[in-house]
Amino acid sequence: MGFGRSFRICLGTLTVLSWLAMPGLAQTLPWDLYVDDASASACDAVNAANAELVVLNTTGQLVLVTGEDLTLQDSYVDLDGFVYFEEAQAGVIGFALDGDGVRSLWWTSLTGHVVHVDGFTGVPSETDFLPTDFTNAACDACDYWDDPLVCPSTDFPPITINFCGANSLASLSLTLASLGFVSLMRRRSV
Image (cartoon, rainbow, N blue to C red; front, side):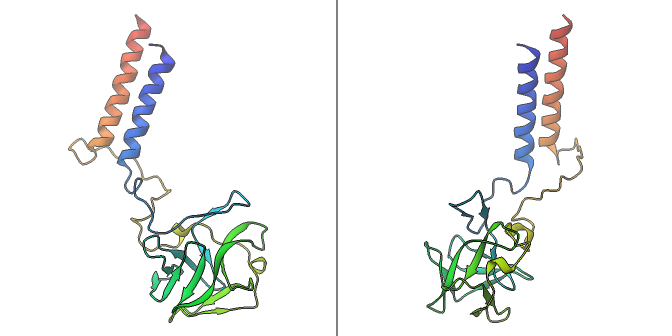
């Protein structure tokens, strides 16, 4: 077995074990991800005039994620993206160009104007604004979701090795990587 192959096996083992040790990596998010057919955009944060929302994938309800997360109990988004509030049609969710020229996800009225959401009642109302009137539109709902266990952190914590068992997966991966490297060095020196 050559140096390159041994190194790749050790690196692969270490990578897989470190992925398994990361909390929340295999967890699916509780909201829908929308993919734009006209661009490479994929967003899960729905922009309104005054808030960001997500669409729960189990119920289709909207959750206001700006500030404290609040499920809009009387809301529903169907499979075609049409929004209903208290059984009445209240617009549509879809991609549109924002003021930065980026296609982002918006809750708009049927006339294409951005919807305003009352922060206390959840009642939507049409504004005079278009998506192009807004810059720095949100795309990633994890930036707003309150529960840190739902979204995996992009900040890498410092590596700590605890040989008493608490971080046994990290210890195992380091041990396997070390053994693979030592074995490789022995073969190269013979």
